[in-house]
Image 1 (cartoon, rainbow, N blue to C red):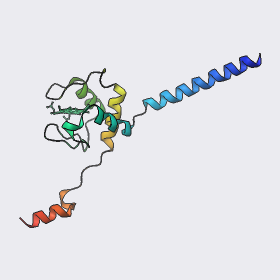
Image 2: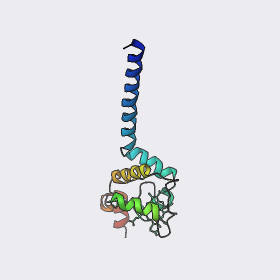
Image 3: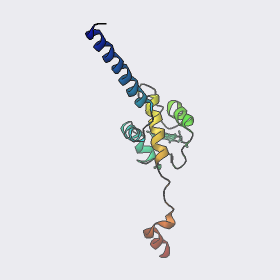
Image 4: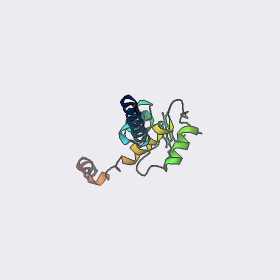
Length: 123
Ligand code: HEC
């Protein structure tokens, strides 16, 4: 085999392996990407920046719904929440958002916050 052909085959092999590595990376859920997407597509005005809920949207944490239920809800929301079609939010992006919600720690009990305890004592 000519040297140039060997180099070509080696390069082709490397780019296929590289391509596989990149696509494997893309399908792994990322909480960090999930947070960015959550902010970018505007979940936060209704559900709070940490998924803690706000005046207009329910709390999504702690103990988020199972991933399939979250995905179904986002795609086919029957109520006040807008449904997000795949053209706006891909399945991979939803998986990332779920990963993000799963990493948000539960809020601390009000009993552990000194400023609140003080207010309580003044009652
Ligand atoms: C305009 C406000 C609004 C926006 C924007 C919004 N939501 Fe909601 N969401 C709601 C409301 C209100 C509910 C409660 C159910 C209902 O009334 O439809 C809800 C319910 C949910 C639920 C079901 C929670 C449960 O426990 O039943 C999930 C999951 C959810 N939202 C995730 C998201 C995500 C992720 C985004 C961004 C892609 C988003 N929402 C954007 C208002 C919103």
